[in-house]
Image 1 (cartoon, helix red, strand yellow):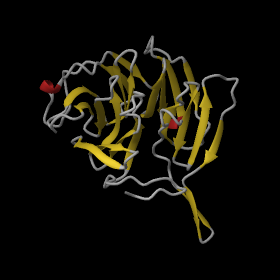
Image 2 (cartoon, rainbow, N blue to C red; image 1 turned 180 degrees about the vertical axis):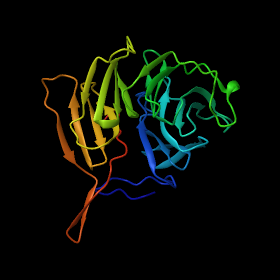
Image 3 (cartoon, rainbow, N blue to C red; image 1 turned 60 degrees about the horizontal axis):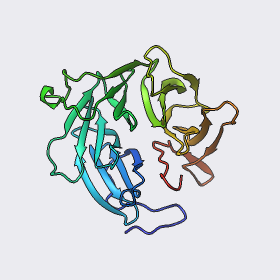
Length: 269
């Protein structure tokens, strides 16, 4: 086990390439509250137990995995997406067989979210759309050789003004982060393809890499390539702020690293 330090703990058996997303379990159950789901450019999706620093489960998405998230009330299933333009469902604990394809896009699928109240999987893509899918419906039978699925029909299809880079849902709000620092916020109770509830821009100055809603549902955090994270709020009465992170100084030179992923712990925030 890697030793903990003031800088945190390094997970054992990490991905062999860059990490694309990290997501804690949101179920709140004692047995799942320390589970961390990680996707990577090495095509792998890995499930870690943070408390024991062990790799619990892993599978190959079939292409570079750009995001993954838990679905269902007990977090016994996950969905992943990637450069194969597909959204795939995988049941944890089962034999490592072929995953079910539940949706597809016309370009790489960059991000996923799960709306528990509606039991919907939401996917955002570089094809400038956000689409929702029923995780109980598999379209694997219509998959072609490259993984794309002609027969998959989204429940909602929302056109976006730019490529979708990140997305998250909390309560009845869906936050979508796009190119050119654009942020669109939707009411999941009435997903309107014609307009968002809120259209704004992030406080940060450079390309967005990740957005995550606060556990209390009052706002969201945005990470960018400039080594900064901003905290922004749904209410205009609360003032947003930003801070620097993921930087180091060597020989008087400051090196700035992009912040590729954010995850709030469901209990500790």
